[in-house]
Image 1 (tube, rainbow, N blue to C red):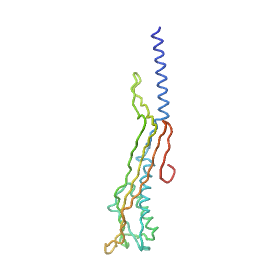
Image 2 (cartoon, rainbow, N blue to C red):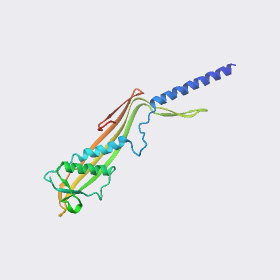
Image 3 (cartoon, rainbow, N blue to C red):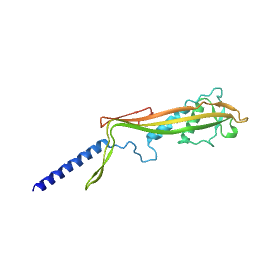
Image 4 (tube, helix red, strand yellow):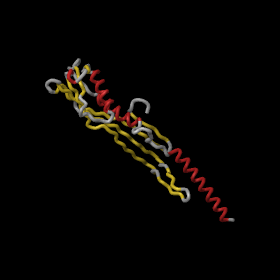
Length: 204
């Protein structure tokens, strides 16, 4: 009788424990990276907007009205079509005109990307996520308990852009290395509170 009662109490406590763990998991076990595409929208924005900010730094004087053609033969980058579109827009903003073909161009523009990528980092003051094995139940993951923590994604872009005279091949302009960064940070406080800070444009 006593053994049966003790067993009943133990089972009751186990059920309460499992319920508590499930509730904590529902509150604290949020996956920061979730997407149905190859890259999250945040990752796409970090790369594209850092590239846009880099290209926007390009300044050229004395070539207003000159016809240009962008040579893309050796250009490789993530989201390269978007970067090339932004480069053409910047050249138009600076007063240059797109040529119908390379043969009709006065200036051949050659962009190059030194680096374009995302750095991930993070730190935690608290208890990291811990897998717990329960007899007869299997394994359950106890979520992290963050007194304070941060996950950071930093998009970096570094480019150089130069233009050659279509007839002589001599340089008409050569930019310095242009660089820009965009960040997205996820902060966690007191186990359940979180905020996000970013310099991305738009709603993220």
